[in-house]
Length: 484
Image 1 (cartoon, one colour):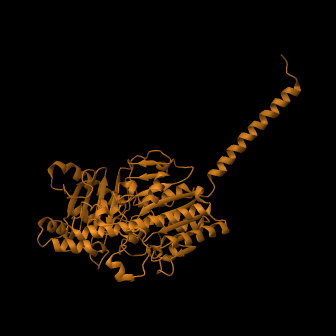
Image 2 (cartoon, rainbow, N blue to C red):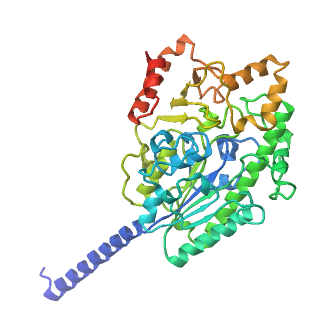
């Protein structure tokens, strides 16, 4: 059978048209992949990892907005910040470096030579915005914000960083600015809840008077479970309830921010991440190196890129990984000398080898006293070194204010168990080892148990390697005291 020349010509024309159509579609897909993506980073202040409903909190319906966010994205169960206090934690997140590596181990500005995420985004044409906590990212010139709103008082700013309606208003203002200037955006929205003073507490009234941010739900003492790392005393339970009242208001702020993003029409092209800067401001949590100090709820939503309802209970991620991950996700150049690495493959449902451990630290923060602590957690086990513990120095900090610490001191006068627990908090011991899977609240120190000698030695070695790799200034001290 012979085909006519006209038939062959028509077939070739049809084939050419099909090839051209496929190439156009592929080019369209490629172009879509590289459309600049927006980023909304939402942080809470002093929120414990297990104070969120989707992370096992027993208070009914305490975080409905965060739970919804988790349903629409991925939540990590082994996520950590690298230091459990506000400013150095946030500066570590925004530099991809440990506090001892970026020059800001305490309430210090980072070194001028350290690149920041905001500088990289600014060069890439992003609009940088921040709501609250702007004073905790220093020096100012290293964090070039195009839009910032400080917490202010009840009549301005963000209502002491605790007014959901004001967060909605300013977020919308920023989103509209992004659209007007036709720039992709990065917004860091920082709730000041549930930081002390807690909602409804005497501390709150003493600091700000009677005209306070609105509370739409008050959590009562009989609704809460006192964490096992604290004694279940009436005043402790009362303060835990006040804390959860602040947690609920924080969740309303998250809801307001997400509503603003939806109303802006830019939600479909925005990566949303939620984290806490450190654990709750109670003894054995904030300003330490325990699981309740550094473990954080970490939730990511990225429409069209992340399947909904994912849970990662295998891999370890930490604050130093945030900056490299964002740069990777936005197709921006990597920055040399970051301590963290991108976990973008995890967001795509892949695996990453060697994500089985995390390193955390603490430094001289309060009253010029050296409270140096280091911790490495690998798998289930956490090894903590308290360099300052000598039986004489006593710990200080925000966690020792309020009802709980005072109640523990009072009860310790005639309750041996509370006295021992209080002394452990105040004076500590040089080394601690915990099986955090069985003992997440760190109640049973295994450091002197011969059955765990091999685990202890392995974690000592792992800690030493990370301290050496990142040029931790007290690495030699650790080797001399604990390795020889």
